[in-house]
Image 1 (spheres, rainbow, N blue to C red):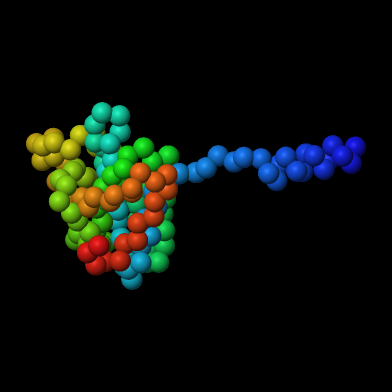
Image 2 (tube, helix red, strand yellow):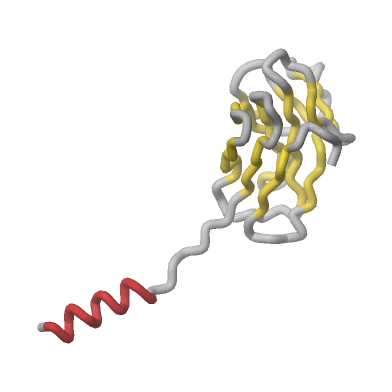
Length: 135
């Protein structure tokens, strides 16, 4: 009996665990930020938002295994002013959203925003530190 208990404990202690892959954004500014994320999903780009991240807080914005080398992010302050933008045009909404496709945002009733491209180097996990200064 004791041997069975020890074996069970041993197998739980050293059992392989599923590695959690994710994309995390840490807000290292003194302000609350709103964050939108873009990535390729199947054969089209998709943008999702908004995550509200407090000062000195982190949020997992992609909880699934990273399947794309590049992830795109766009951040605003609480007044809607961009604090992180880049050169890749994608679509956002004023309220919580999921938008498939990045073409013709205005014509489809969305808002065009310039997302910053993050190179995750094909890693399974990636953390981006938002400092408020251009990376």
